[in-house]
Image 1 (tube, rainbow, N blue to C red):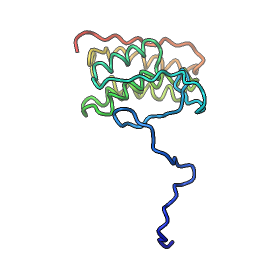
Image 2 (cartoon, helix red, strand yellow):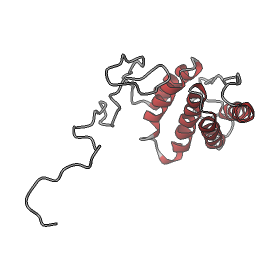
Image 3 (tube, rainbow, N blue to C red):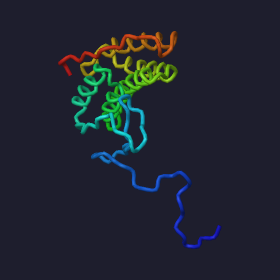
Image 4 (spheres, one colour):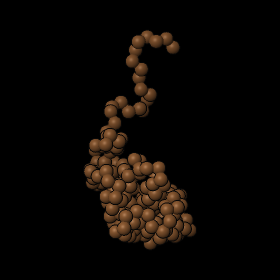
Length: 173
């Protein structure tokens, strides 16, 4: 094809406008979401309150724990993902594992047992490598409770009631 000087057209279905970004410049989804974080039609009411999150990892961990313990797993995942991406290499598996545990429980809430089990197991493996307690989080206990939940979901699917773990963070950081 000869270069005729015409401006190339984006592929069919490709976005034509600038992507929405948060204050740190990271891409964000502008679509409204339901209470479990599922995207809704663009003209729907947003049931998900968007938070302005701090940059401090300790504060992000605390906010994520508040969401997690309130069973707002999608919001916990969003919060911890904010800490994961800029984290130092030696902490990445901790943040990714915490995020995966939260996403695993999100999949359970949404009725997706296969996705739930996969992410719960993967997240439990990652956080378990951090010993008994890391950043004040009892990661060994959380990993064990997460594996127990994954096993129950694997046996009976997402319709079975499970015991959600509660994260306890000590003041020693």
